[in-house]
Length: 146
Image 1 (cartoon, rainbow, N blue to C red):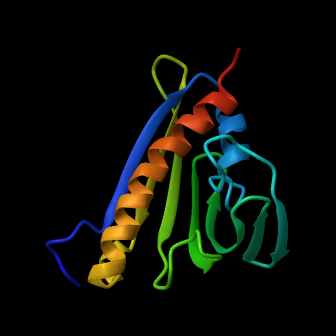
Image 2: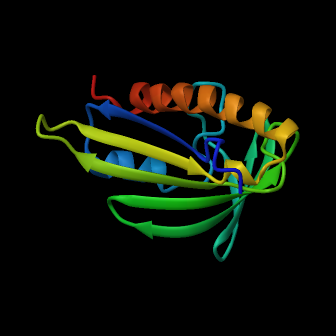
C-alpha cells in the first residue's frame, strides 16, 4: 500500500429533512448513480448482493456490507459498466446524524483507492471526488423539505 496517496474521499452535507427520509435514500444500493439528480433504479437483489440498473449509466454491482438503521450503511462497489470504478473495488460508507439545529448531516467516506495502480488511481480519485460533491448536493435537493 502506498501511504503517500490518498486512500479515502470524505464529504458531508446538512439536509433539512428527517433522519428516516435520509436513511431511506442512503440504505438503497447505488442511489448515488445518477447525473446529479436522484432517479429510481431497477435493483435485482440476491442476498447481500445487488445489481443496480441505471437508464443512463448502465449496470453496477454492490455488496451490502452493513445496514444499521437509522445511522450507518456500508456497501462495497463490485464494478459495473464503463462508468464505474474498475477492480479493485471500494468501500462506500454513509452516516446519518441529527444536528443540534434539527437538520440531518449526511456523511460519506469511500475508501480503498490506494489499491489502484498509478494510471487508474489518478482517474478514479479525481472522478469520484467530483462525483461525491455532486451526489451530496443531489441528495440535499431531493430530500430537503420545501
